[in-house]
Every structure is written in C-alpha cells, then in structure tokens.
Image (tube, rainbow, N blue to C red; front, side, top):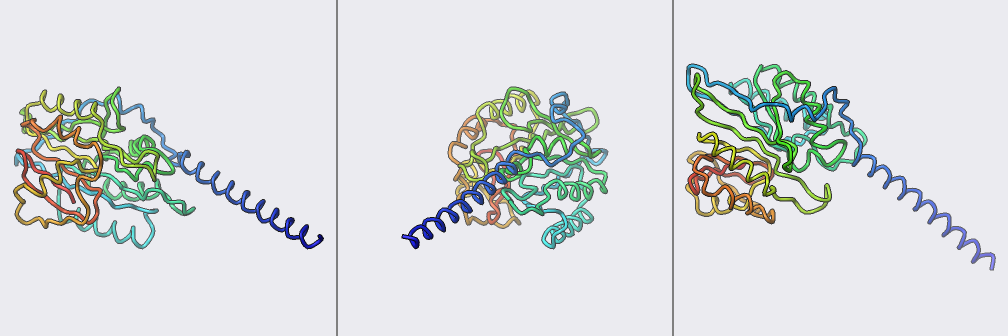
Length: 306
C-alpha cells in the first residue's frame, strides 16, 4: 500500500511539474505573440495622412529600382546576418539606384529564442540603407508580423528613418497600400504600387491568406486613374505566376527554377481575375518562395519572382 501511495505521489508531482512548465511555456508564447518590442516614436496611424509619393527620373529619363526580399534577419549581429548585410552592401556599392523595395520577410518569423532581436536587426539594416541617401520602402511578408510586433509596429518603427516612404488606404485590408508616381520633369511616366499580400491565419501555423478582393479592386482603380505603366510589388505570388512560368516568354538572362508550385496559395486567383485585363500593369514582382526564380512575360505583363 505504501508503494502505491509513493507511486501516486511521484506521478502527481511529475504531472504538477509538467502542468507548470506547459503553462509557463504557453504564457511565454502568448506574450511573444502579443507584445510590441519596437519602442517606436511614431504612430502607425500617421501613414493614413500620407499622399502618394512623387519621385523623378532626372535628366537621364531612367529610374532604377533595387528589390531585396527574404533576408530573414535574426538580430543583425549573427554570422548569417553579417554575411547577408555585407553582401547587400556590396550590391548597393556597385548598383546605384533610385528606390529600394524591401519585398517582405525582412526578419525571421516565429522565433522563440530569447536573443532574437527583430527591431535591432531592422535598425542595423535600415541604418545601412540610410548611408546611401536613397528612398526605400517595405512591402510586408508573411513572416514579418508573426512575433514580437505586427506589421503596423514595424512600419511605425521604420518611420524614424529619413528616406523611408510608405502609406496606406483606410477601409481596405492590409497594412501597406500606396503608390510611388515617377515623373520625367512634369510628366508622369510610370507608377509603382506597394501592397500587403497577407500572412498566415492563425499566425505562424495557419494557412496562407490570399490578397483580399478590396485590395485588388483598389489597385485596379488607382492604376486606371493614372493611365501609365505600373510595376506592382508584394511578397507572396498569385496563381498567375504558375501560368506565366508554364506558358510565358522567359526573360533572357534570368535563371528559371521551380522547386515549389507557384500557385499554392488558395484563392489568390481572385486578385488575378480582377487585374487580368488591366493594360497598364506591366510588372508584378514577388518573393516568398526561396528556391524558385523566374521572370516571364505573360498576358501582357512580366511576372518576376526571386
């Protein structure tokens, strides 16, 4: 009888330890999901007052855009991050540009390590960009908002940097939707649309969410108002990328790779259907699928993913 009591006592103690540990870990996860570690001095709501940005080609008539995506920074100081930053610096030194588009997954996603420093990494990266006196912007990826702050917190944090530009439209989904209008003198010659393509719901482990219908309609309407060729940047590809890969005309000099299907996000065809006949959209550029690479001309526009 005493042995049974001892066994029951040991089991009860072990269960208590497991429950305490599980509760502590669960509490830690909930904290990390809901906290904001940005210490931003600006408020996200400021972006609703921003007008569309106007930039100029200068006398050359040329406007160069450099896209950076899927860097997945950890803290800005790790060996991997140092290597990535060094490579980006080399590119920036050799490739003068007029605009830098950060096309999502700038930082690591669901990372529970205590030394993960999302905003420290963003600060180191943004400080590097600021050295080049070049305008830059951010299209959120699916990982950026998964832990230690939402996309809105990231944007509020980025507002402190002189050359960062952004904006959003009220009453539609997503944390970033705005245009950069390119002029040659007083003449509008091109537009660049920056969009939020969504994330997982629930965060970190749920299915990928598609671009919402109200976002696609907003894009279509704004592009048609401008009546100039438009390049669109967002993070996760739509179903049309698979069609472009299979049936499009490949851009010479860009390697074509497919390790994952390009059309694996359900319902992203809604976006494609809404903008498919828009004659002004000349480029859609994405990231997200690390091992894939393409640039193909299909249905009157280029689909590019790197």
